[in-house]
Every structure is written in C-alpha cells, then in structure tokens.
Amino acid sequence: MEPGAMDWMAWTWQTASFFGFIAAMLVVMTVWELRAPGGNPRRGVLGIDTTRGDRLFVSLLAAAFVHLLWLAFIGMPLWPATLVSVAVAVLIFRYV
Image 1 (tube, helix red, strand yellow):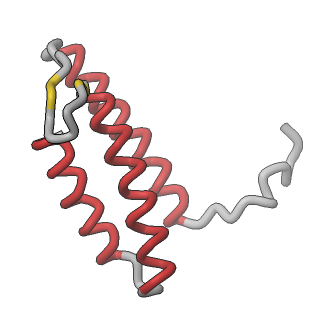
Image 2 (cartoon, one colour):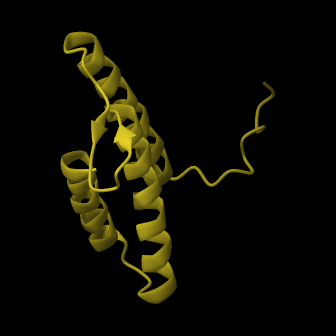
C-alpha cells in the first residue's frame, strides 16, 4: 500500500478505539465459545432462537441505532448513548 492511501479516512483515537473494541469483543466471544461450548440456541422474549453470536450481532446493531438516534434528537456528547447501549446489550444477552 502506498503512503497516504488511508488519508481519506478520519482515523481519530475514538475511531481506532471503536474498531479495537469490536475486535476485542470478537476475540472474547471466540475464546468464550472455545472454553465453554454451548452457545445452544435459546428462545427469548422475541420468540426466536438465538445464540451468543446472534445476541452479539443484535447488540451491535442496537448500539448503532441508539447512537444514531441520540445524535438525531439530543446531539453531543455521546457517552450517555454508550451507557444506554451497554444497558441494552446486557438486556439483550439476558432476555433475548
């Protein structure tokens, strides 16, 4: 790759930490599954069978929507939206 090929992207520490966090979550989920296999499907309040990976994916989608809605209706700062997203993820892993 030539020097400056990624200059068009806005790589701030926040962007790097976001992608680092997602990569870390994927590593943790992989280790969890290798250590304790048994992400057997579970029927939650939605009435569909979901595995750990499904719940992680739904949590990531929910976090994206929470942040977008927060920006649309409230604006900055975004750290409260992150707290809401973590709470939503806990609920999803517990009840979905």
